[in-house]
Image (tube, rainbow, N blue to C red):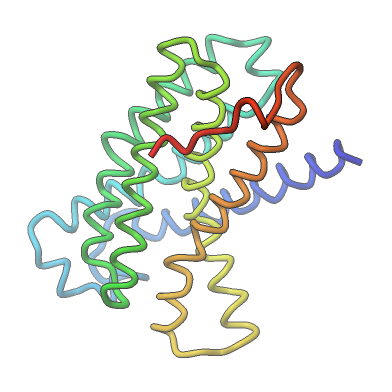
Length: 221
């Protein structure tokens, strides 16, 4: 049963990654007046905003793909060089491109101060968890490395969950578009992070010789 659930999960993840790729391809070649950018014309006049948007959009698919490989036990055990290479790629892209550009986009997010706080906090936590995943493996703390990678990738998946929540809310409630945007700005990553923490707790309970009473997973913040 668990095996079937894993196959379904990976299948859905692959499908949503494909949809994200299609979204990214809308901006190839880059134009200032397509899709989401139609409502961001004022921000597009800011010198640094177009570059931040390009960086964020063009790296999103590759970040999800690289992060996806980090949770394959077979790849991790049989092809350690690939696991490490993709892990380094994920860390570099997130820290220097995706999270930093996301912070800039968050400052200019639609929906007022609530949405801005949500997206800025998302980018800061994404950067921090990814950084902690890197420093943990450098010091040999494998368990902390795994926990922070789970958190980091959960936030990376907000690119997918945000759109999924948007679709569900619009389908059920049909609210004002800006109300939807404010809601998914928070739901898109807080739900993911809650699920990540639940997974970390479950893995801690299953770990040989481990006890939650003695060692609880740390958020690191």
